Length: 348
Image (cartoon, rainbow, N blue to C red; front, side, top):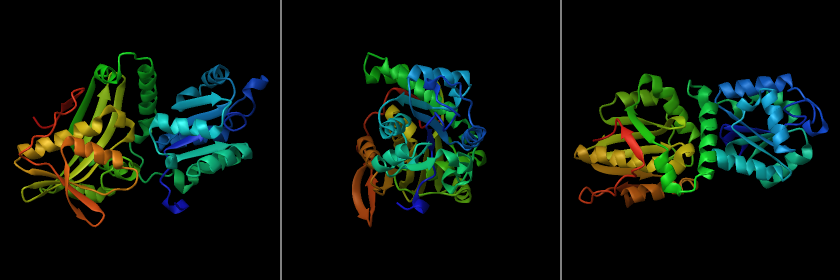
């Protein structure tokens, strides 16, 4: 992957000592953050780019300093210890459910940067001296900055609390999902949704059926077309709102409802949200007397979505170049939808 092909950074992972702040906590310092670092924290957060920390030290001391300096709220994940920085970066990406190719790393130590670059070549590494110029780089400039993007940190911090709750839950995974009180809301895309819908097509890779991207003008046209259905999915639970996490674009062709694109934020993959949305789309099509059809283009990172589609009832019927054509047999009702999520705005 060339620099021009690299996706926009979703998370910047910071070293702390002599990178975020001017000094070393364990040496008895009370280091203040660098002004340029504070400016970068705020500007990237405004654009919806997350912050995490991977630093050497004692976790309790570092967390205390983050809190005392009122820096802790900026970070969605913090990994402090004495292991390899690459391991910390890898764990952060897994915790946030984002691809390593959307992660960047900043550290004042060239040895640490070299270790991360060697172990995780898809992670972009920057020296601490360049912190102030990061917001000006193309890698840190999303195509759209939506109102929801500016609240992304809050959503991911809520997810961090969910993970902590799950780690302490002892009654099994399904019981935990049942305990969340998940509610999915489906709605047609409106003018106010178009920027977020376009952003989803650009940012979402792993749970994306065809890899298509749509600009705002194209989504506006499809939303107004009587031959298309553009739906957005939102999700919430007892910990808070996940925001808009899914999108589907369906074309009505004859007696078929052809799913041209379905995508789901990686943040909710473990909640079974993809299955819930697929079952709703199938039910809508069948209720309208149409055969549910879907296109799927393998990309190397979206295989899990294909598995989910097959469990929902889609079966491969043909190939068209690198594209699979799948369909649900109207004479064979699909399996029951997952029961841990209540759907509002969906098919009856």
